[in-house]
Amino acid sequence: MKRDSRDNSAGTPPAKVQKNDSSKVTVRFLIPARAAGLIIGKGGENIKKIRSQYSVKLNIPDNRGIERVFTVEGELSAIANVVREIVPKIKDVMNAKLSDPKRIMGYQRPPRRRRGPNGEELEEEEEDEGMIDLRMLVHQSVAGSIIGRGGERIRELRSKHKMRVIKVYQMLAPLSTDRVVQLVAEPENAINCLESVVEVVEVCA
Image 1: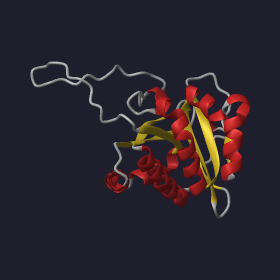
Image 2 (image 1 turned 120 degrees about the vertical axis):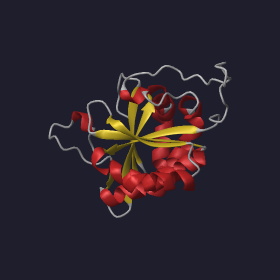
Image 3 (image 1 turned 90 degrees about the vertical axis):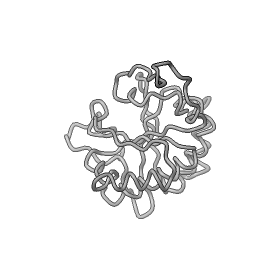
Image 4 (image 1 turned 90 degrees about the horizontal axis):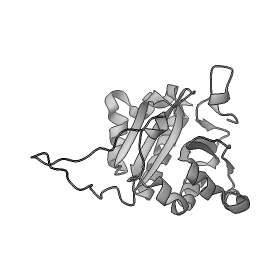
């Protein structure tokens, strides 16, 4: 998978998690533009080191928008290790407490306030502190496999990996046939869930 489906003129974009040979897959993430610079590093130093250390291909095309597509190609275990490597660098940008789930859809929702039984405003909960918010792109044709019949699979993933949020967005990402899978949890739980999601999608790709 070498091209962004947003630039695809054939009308049938490939799945966004794709087998390249018997052991390699390509996974595409949607990341804040600020995170892209932290991953790349000064003069590309960070991204070169990651490519060499984990034997993966990385690509972050230039984009003036608030999100960038981050593509990682390699063995699934290596991709998971890449995410582990970059989380400390981007944790402040990708912190679940600071993320707006609907920015990826091109609009911003108003902040949600918690109210007490008498309508009084409550302080925000701190349960999302330290959690990471990962978003991966999958082709709409495989989204149902992640959800499962009656939502069974997504419930299993939520329980197994202790996910704060695991959601497959109904709305397509702008100018594409991709849907966004959002994973919010403690970093290691989110990464383990990511691996499980990729394994599910591989079967359908």
